Length: 297
Ligand SMILES: Nc1ncnc2c1ncn2[C@@H]1O[C@H](COP(=O)(O)OP(=O)(O)O)[C@@H](O)[C@H]1O
Ligand SMILES: [Mg+2]
Image 1 (cartoon, helix red, strand yellow):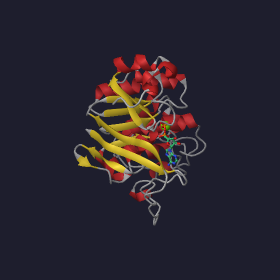
Image 2 (cartoon, rainbow, N blue to C red):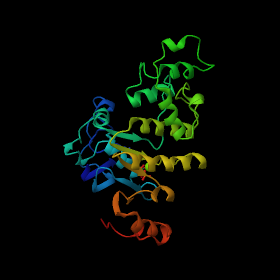
Image 3 (spheres, rainbow, N blue to C red):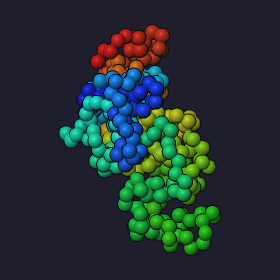
């Protein structure tokens, strides 16, 4: 279970730095950054949020642009540190934990805009995600025949960490990519935004952690892959006890979630069963009471 207690995140209006003087989790924090003065003018991005996410839940978070959804996801993953409040995961206070520590506890995060890695191949990312395929002798035959592409120098199989190719294919095809075409590609600028996004989603599927947070997984994804993606999320929810938090604007994604949370202006405006919340959202921002009333929940 994930619990957010009185979570706040403020930035200085002038410098756009977080008010606690920490930009991100421990290992990524710029060394020696001095905390900002407490009295500095602040912009509140996340305003005293209290939320609980039960195990095996499928929750969609939606709301207008700039409402704080991505920031909330980054706070959960430890990419940003809250100004105040606590985050508990299965009863453990993880507020001060680094990104890696949270990842080791079983939390995954897919960025709204995924990061590119120069010199890392798609198969390396998937192998890292599965954590068990590196150098594995299982499925050798398949690995040998399919891990080699025309672009790979002869004999490179011996030194290339062996990825469990059938699984890698599975993960990539779930997001609409042909594994043969992508497995040896570099995760760099040569990939389009949509391809990168799908590869990142495939790595999260491969990680198969108890909690996965996807930030606008639909962004930049074509319709065919989007249909697959809907299926992927439904399967993930049905076939495992893992929890999913999906940040999305897409009606079809909201429509498969069990619960919907509406986040606007840094506050939770509504939370409820899909059947209660979605019809109201579909009225549009003009008539939607969630966007125009003060905090409801
Ligand atoms: N580090 C930061 N510096 C400056 N502004 C930020 C920072 N992080 C978030 N914001 C601002 O906080 C608000 C919420 O952003 P975000 O969480 O990305 O919203 P959403 O994902 O709901 O569109 C936006 O106005 C954004 O510009
Ligand atoms: Mg966002």
